[in-house]
Image (cartoon, rainbow, N blue to C red; front, side, top):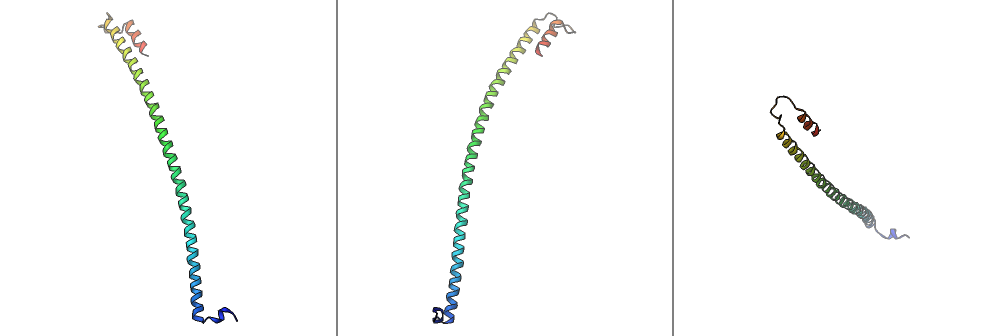
Length: 116
């Protein structure tokens, strides 16, 4: 005599359905838990990568900003040098006795050539 023979058929059917339902719920819970943990792990890795990229981006921006400031300083110095050269050439042109002539004097040619 088996244990299953002691139970009436409706109870056996109910227990079978309950066991199947329990197996489905347990399978769903295990899959859901594994899936959720996988997403959480992937999200943590993604957030760490995002933070590393943000820090690298900020460092690159700061480096570019410093290089830009150095270039601006150089450009201002070059501009000052050129303005001084122009002022000097203008002063020489004002002192040229042939400044009112229609043609270009040799002194004017020399001043023009010095700009190149």
